[in-house]
Length: 55
Image (cartoon, rainbow, N blue to C red; front, side, top):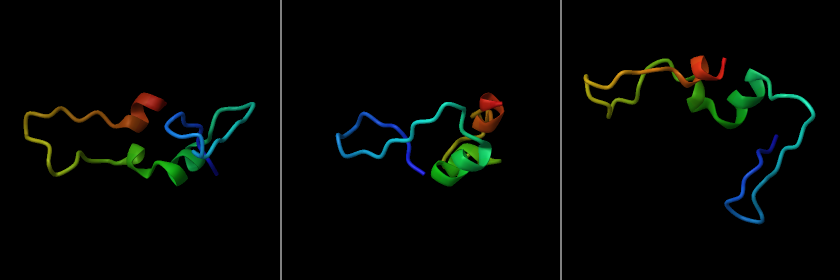
């Protein structure tokens, strides 16, 4: 699977007539489904899972 990107003319591209499934997204961007914040975040950081935002 490839994602569209404008960072380079050689960047991979995925075109589809329908939205990506969670499994497809998880394949190319697993960090979106992290259940806890990165350890470098302070206690003041309010964690909101990206997967919840996508849903």
